[in-house]
Length: 320
Length: 320
Image (tube, rainbow over all chains, first blue to last red; front, side):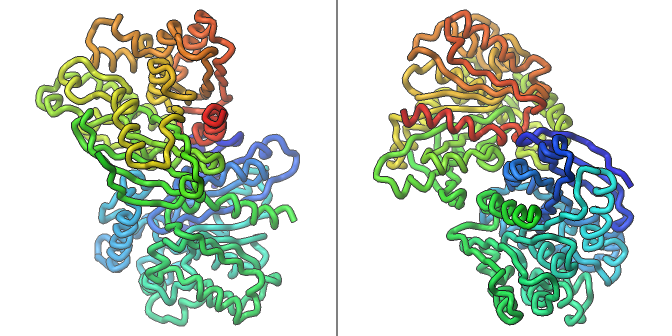
């Protein structure tokens, strides 16, 4: 139940810890990064925590290295947790070839994404080997369909096991002040986990979130694989559907940035308009700030440009 | 003589251009990144340029993605050029096995570096295949020894051919206002190219520079390979030696950051103390600011923490 620190790296006056630990929820060892601002050592008060959930095919390293959250987190006195995006796929997957559609689909999209930015050599992605491609697509839900149901339980991992272990091992972190944000699949994760768990997080924001997965190819592929073909069951994991039934603290508030040059937005994978429509339908439109950023794409150049605003958004609620 | 733009990426209000062009100096096509701040489009005045030279085994992508120079460059109105670090090695190298010592040495150090930060998966390095390992070690000098002398001419490329092509192709850039900075091998490059070319650059700074290569294993290996065994000839490419004979604008000024947790510093590869001693010997100590940053390592977490200060240093001289 404890963490192994494999590296301690100075960053913006604080420390980035590279951690590994054993997850019983996911039946494997998981890696993550934890940024501790200077106040984690200097302050007598516990410090609040912001979870950053990464997108398809990414790991906990992308945000830590290229998202540029640490500068403002250091200034504000906020810790940041950068978890990985999935456990390894179940072995039966490889043996049976089940669900190969998900792997292939993501491989294809991944390739498109790489071509889009012409930046493949330096992307922090898992190698494009067949076995690895099913990594990194956990979608922050608990799978109910075999073989995924054995260990694809990122929802429980992110909302329960990981924070429980973190707060037990790092007493300077304040379990009563958590916020959440994320990118793309991680933006879907942030919005849905916030909406599903009223009171757990003080705030939520998202970069280019998959806002209505039941109506986009990525979401449909993942939900069919992880949850089965009963589409009604998918709605419990869809930010736009969840917002319609939101019963948490009013008004619901969020900050969402989407680049107008984002090819996945243009392809209809993100559908932020549907989230805005759901906000209107449920009377939450005042708190939903969606900013369309002119010409920005889906990359970490987009995230790093606006990450300070998202740390500020979290800080406003964490220090309220 | 012109550039091909393979991608245009929005970043901090400006544009990062991914460029390729043909270098006659290096007898090959070269890739680089060019960041244009918003003022490149909005201002009627030409904008100054900061060159960032990357270190061993890196490319022009490392600084652009992880250095976090763009934010302050955007605010100050400075363009940044991120060149690659070497041409491909000459073919005869592979065929004859000549100079394999350099390749092996760098491979070993590279491996150490990876272990140091436990962060291999996400480092922006060339793949560790034998052929590629001789990439990325150009040392910003013109090789005089075969087979390297045929195309290893990074000094001429950085100081002459590349800027000539850039200023011809991008009229918004001001050829009369250039500054230079760099990391590790690129810090050596920045310091030596500044010292060799009085008046060419308005300012110089460096992150963890190889400050006295004639006295460290990396420099000795590279200089023996590229220049031959006549050690007197090496001094013309050594920042500490060059500073002793500095005849440029007085006082010589620079900003150098070195992390006290940098294993390459501890191993004696960087030797900033020898540069400070040379500054004292030559009466330039007042302008040489060397900051030892407590606990910082050799990675881009170190660079990103202090890059704003280096853009500010360049801005002070570029807008003087």
